[in-house]
Amino acid sequence: MAKRVAVMSPQTRLAHSRRRLRGRWRMPRLDPDDAERAQRNYRMQRRRGIASLVLIFAMLLGLPLLLRVAPWLTELRVWAIPVSWLVLAVLPYPLMSWLAAWQLRRAERIEDR
View 1 (spheres, rainbow, N blue to C red):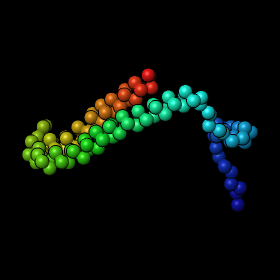
View 2 (spheres, rainbow, N blue to C red; view 1 turned 90 degrees about the vertical axis):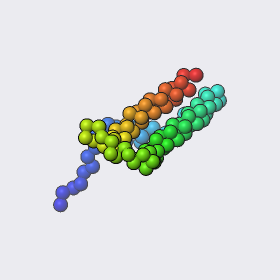
View 3 (cartoon, rainbow, N blue to C red; view 1 turned 120 degrees about the horizontal axis):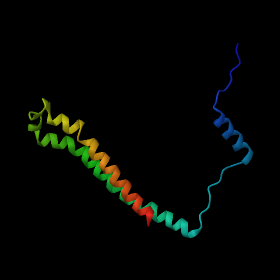
View 4 (cartoon, rainbow, N blue to C red; view 1 turned 180 degrees about the vertical axis):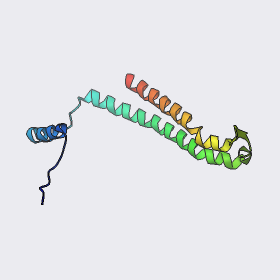
Protein backbone atom coordinates (compact mmCIF):
# COMPACT_ATOMS: atom_id res chain seq x y z
CA MET A 1 0.00 0.00 0.00
CA ALA A 2 1.34 3.44 -0.97
CA LYS A 3 2.05 6.04 1.67
CA ARG A 4 -0.28 9.05 1.60
CA VAL A 5 1.42 12.40 1.20
CA ALA A 6 -0.18 15.81 1.67
CA VAL A 7 0.31 17.93 -1.45
CA MET A 8 0.33 21.69 -0.98
CA SER A 9 1.73 24.72 -2.67
CA PRO A 10 4.99 26.29 -1.48
CA GLN A 11 3.07 29.35 -0.29
CA THR A 12 0.87 27.19 1.94
CA ARG A 13 3.89 25.39 3.33
CA LEU A 14 5.56 28.75 4.01
CA ALA A 15 2.44 30.11 5.74
CA HIS A 16 2.20 27.01 7.94
CA SER A 17 5.86 27.25 8.93
CA ARG A 18 5.58 30.96 9.78
CA ARG A 19 2.53 30.35 11.94
CA ARG A 20 4.43 27.81 14.00
CA LEU A 21 7.39 30.14 14.47
CA ARG A 22 5.60 33.36 15.35
CA GLY A 23 2.96 32.04 17.65
CA ARG A 24 -0.60 33.18 17.81
CA TRP A 25 -1.78 36.15 15.72
CA ARG A 26 -3.25 39.02 17.69
CA MET A 27 -5.52 41.74 16.40
CA PRO A 28 -3.72 45.09 16.35
CA ARG A 29 -5.00 47.67 18.81
CA LEU A 30 -6.13 51.03 17.57
CA ASP A 31 -5.59 54.20 19.50
CA PRO A 32 -8.86 55.64 20.90
CA ASP A 33 -9.30 58.29 18.19
CA ASP A 34 -8.90 55.78 15.36
CA ALA A 35 -11.17 53.27 17.10
CA GLU A 36 -13.90 55.90 17.48
CA ARG A 37 -13.57 56.90 13.83
CA ALA A 38 -13.71 53.26 12.73
CA GLN A 39 -16.87 52.70 14.80
CA ARG A 40 -18.49 55.83 13.35
CA ASN A 41 -17.63 54.75 9.79
CA TYR A 42 -18.98 51.27 10.46
CA ARG A 43 -22.29 52.59 11.81
CA MET A 44 -22.77 55.05 8.95
CA GLN A 45 -21.90 52.47 6.29
CA ARG A 46 -24.22 49.92 7.90
CA ARG A 47 -27.07 52.45 7.93
CA ARG A 48 -26.53 53.28 4.28
CA GLY A 49 -26.10 49.62 3.38
CA ILE A 50 -29.49 48.83 4.87
CA ALA A 51 -31.04 51.42 2.55
CA SER A 52 -29.42 49.69 -0.44
CA LEU A 53 -30.66 46.28 0.72
CA VAL A 54 -34.19 47.62 1.06
CA LEU A 55 -34.02 48.97 -2.49
CA ILE A 56 -32.74 45.71 -3.95
CA PHE A 57 -35.37 43.67 -2.12
CA ALA A 58 -38.07 46.09 -3.27
CA MET A 59 -36.86 45.71 -6.84
CA LEU A 60 -36.64 41.91 -6.75
CA LEU A 61 -39.95 41.47 -4.96
CA GLY A 62 -41.58 44.23 -7.00
CA LEU A 63 -40.94 42.60 -10.37
CA PRO A 64 -43.35 39.69 -9.81
CA LEU A 65 -45.89 42.14 -8.39
CA LEU A 66 -45.51 44.29 -11.50
CA LEU A 67 -46.22 41.28 -13.69
CA ARG A 68 -49.22 40.36 -11.54
CA VAL A 69 -50.66 43.87 -11.79
CA ALA A 70 -49.86 44.29 -15.50
CA PRO A 71 -50.60 40.94 -17.19
CA TRP A 72 -50.77 42.70 -20.55
CA LEU A 73 -46.94 42.77 -20.55
CA THR A 74 -47.03 39.09 -21.55
CA GLU A 75 -48.85 39.88 -24.79
CA LEU A 76 -46.67 42.90 -25.60
CA ARG A 77 -43.62 41.80 -27.61
CA VAL A 78 -40.28 43.29 -28.57
CA TRP A 79 -38.47 41.34 -31.33
CA ALA A 80 -40.92 38.46 -30.77
CA ILE A 81 -39.94 38.23 -27.07
CA PRO A 82 -42.61 38.93 -24.44
CA VAL A 83 -41.85 42.10 -22.48
CA SER A 84 -42.55 40.21 -19.24
CA TRP A 85 -39.56 37.96 -19.98
CA LEU A 86 -37.38 40.96 -20.72
CA VAL A 87 -38.46 42.59 -17.46
CA LEU A 88 -37.42 39.48 -15.52
CA ALA A 89 -34.30 38.52 -17.48
CA VAL A 90 -32.76 41.83 -18.52
CA LEU A 91 -34.02 44.69 -16.35
CA PRO A 92 -32.67 43.59 -12.92
CA TYR A 93 -28.99 43.43 -13.92
CA PRO A 94 -28.44 47.05 -14.95
CA LEU A 95 -30.46 48.15 -11.91
CA MET A 96 -28.36 45.99 -9.57
CA SER A 97 -25.14 47.26 -11.18
CA TRP A 98 -26.27 50.85 -10.74
CA LEU A 99 -27.28 50.15 -7.14
CA ALA A 100 -23.89 48.54 -6.38
CA ALA A 101 -22.00 51.50 -7.88
CA TRP A 102 -24.21 53.94 -5.97
CA GLN A 103 -23.61 52.12 -2.69
CA LEU A 104 -19.85 51.97 -3.35
CA ARG A 105 -19.69 55.73 -3.96
CA ARG A 106 -21.63 56.39 -0.76
CA ALA A 107 -19.36 54.10 1.28
CA GLU A 108 -16.20 55.68 -0.15
CA ARG A 109 -17.50 59.16 0.65
CA ILE A 110 -17.87 58.13 4.28
CA GLU A 111 -14.31 56.81 4.39
CA ASP A 112 -12.91 59.95 2.75
CA ARG A 113 -14.27 62.18 5.54
